Every structure is written in structure tokens, then in C-alpha cells.
Picture 1 (cartoon, one colour):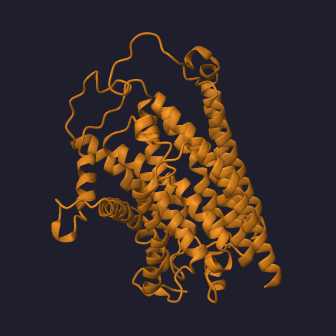
Picture 2 (tube, chains in turn green, blue):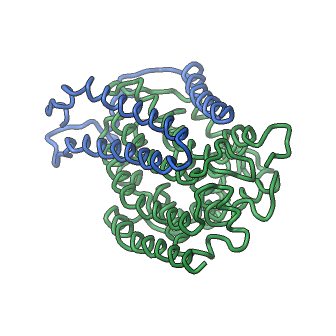
Picture 3 (tube, one colour):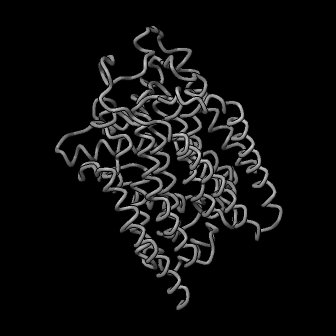
Length: 324
Length: 119
């Protein structure tokens, strides 16, 4: 289906949403929203100094400018080329899965019958680059942070895959358009609530949000895998997690919340954006609510309850597909 | 396909451009202290109380790389039903990825084998 705009649907997807503009726009809005929400919970105003009439919305933009124009320090003990390249590759790789996810009918860069499955696999592959980045930095804090990241990845990726698999089994397809089409009666969250819960918790672990903010736990390992970075490279290293949140929220909206339904076109894109909030808002709010788990507690949740729940979700889907 | 190429080119261009702009226009006052490894506030002194064992880190990297290759292989198998045409680019990507890993291991094998550099 064609997208009603001067640009074709795939170009809108590449340039605007969920493409380049969407990724950078989300980075700004998510940082602002997180600071505002946490401030509200803690009875503070949050960012207000820059663009007061907009509620400080431009504060993250000012912060990003400040970081871009601060001195770029390349530590002497590192391979400088790799030190500069790995955060860029990490940020880029985190955004790559959007190529296969549709934001509205026709608004997808690469339509594919296994598009959502490929997106899930791409999300899980990025851990390699995180380890490579920490390796390049060659610092004990980055090593420990990367080790925690890998342990956490091993704990959440099986449940995340199983939650996605449960939905693919239920829908009988991994094509984003058909997945949304199947949900025209009932949304995935109602068809398989277990998979939704697993996906939401795995999303928090994957994006290392509280209570799973363990790899970069400030009181323990400075900033974990991002310790040695400053300037623009810090934006990429640290912002990569926000990009992952963006991708997983979009994927979640399509898998569980009926994507762009009940509309299409521009309105469909806006509806998808609004549905992403169901994943983004809790991820922002938990920062103000939960303390941080220890790594062993997080691993026990991942390999214990979450894995059992995700297996149950797959069984649920098999049963539902059999009855349906 | 044009959209994918455009997305990748524009995304990477913006990322690299911001780094180049920062590098060219930010103030630069290099000092020995700034370029040192971060040590949480103070310079290291005396014998270490507990040594962090690093030699297994390479295995973690290896596992994550192998997992990535297996993930891609799975996708290739999944997409095989969609038509042989889809399999060829993925297989090519897999070969390139593995070749890159082999090249890096080949280049740094001696360095990796030197256990004194791991501590």
C-alpha cells in the first residue's frame, strides 16, 4: 500500500519514522521525558533552564551540543581508531533493526516475510559490539561492565526470543504487515499476556534500565562500558541504549499492541508512536521507583522466573493456535 | 533497496559528521593526565589487593561472535523458504563476517597468545 505523501512509504521510513529523524528525535525526547518524569516523582521541576515555555524540552539538545563541542580525548593506552569507531558502530547497529519493522502500511524500508524475526536477531547481535567497545577501552571498569552486560544478555535473550517466538507461532507469520493484520480482532497483549510480560521485563533488561541498570552501576563501576568516553563518542556509547529502547518499543507495539491499527497512513504512524509509549513510559518511570538488583539476582530472574514464563508463553501460543 | 541504502548512508554520515565536527571545532588542550587510563580519582599505588583475571575475556568475545554467526545462520535458514534469492545475500554476509573475524584472529594471534599482556 502506498503512503500518502510526496515521498514513497519506504523513503518516509528511511528518512523520518522509524528512520534517521525518528532515532535522533527519540534520543532527545526520551532523555527529556526521563528527567521530567523522575523529577515529578521526586517533587522537583526537572530541566527548565533552556526553553522554559516548552518545559525544558530543548535542554537535552543543549546538552548534546555541549558534548559535541567538548574536547575529544583519545586515551593513550588504546588503539585510537578502534576507540573512536566502536561507539559509532554500536549506535548504528542498535538502530539497524528498524529497517525491517513497519510503522504503518507500506512504511517499511525492507519488507520481508520474516522481517520481525530478523529484527529480533539483529537486536540480540549487538552485544558483540558492546564487548568490543569495552575491550578497546582497556579499563578495568569497562571490562567488569562488559562482563555484566554479557551475563545479563545471556539471561534475557532466551526469554526475549521465546516471547517473540510465541507471538510468531500464534500469528503464523513474522511479516510485520500480516502480524498487525491478524491483530485486527484482538491485540497480541490479550491473546498472550504471558509473552507480553516477558517481553516487557526482557526489554528493561536489554536496555539496562532500573532495576537492571547493572553494567553501568555508578557507585560500583563508574560508568561500566562507557567509562573512558567523552564528547560525541560518549553520546553514542551511552545513547545506544536509548536507541535499543526505541527499537524494542517499536517492535513491541507491532507485536503486542496492534501496530498502527485502527488507522493507516500518517494517522497510523502517529498511533504506532503513541503505542510505543506503553513500553517507553514504564522504562523511564522505573528509574524513580526501583532500586538496583545485584547481578546474581538479575541472573536468577532471567534464568529462573522469566525463562519459565517465556516457555509457558510458547505453550500458551501453541495451545491457542491449536484451538483458534 | 534504495531506502535501506539511503538510511544506512545518512545514519552513518550523521554519526561520523558529528564526531568530525567535534574533533575540528572543540577546544584542544591535551595533557598527560587526560590521556591516562581512568583510575577512579587517584593514581594507583602499592600492590593490588585483588587481581581481576582478564584472560577469560577473550572467550566471552569469542562466544558472542559465534552466537552472532549462529544467529545469522538461523535467519538464513528461516528465510530459505522465502526463496533462494534471499539466501544468497545473507550467506555472502555471513562469509564476509567470518572472514573478517578470521583476519583479525590471524593478525593478532601471537599477541593473544602472549599471556603477559593479559594481566
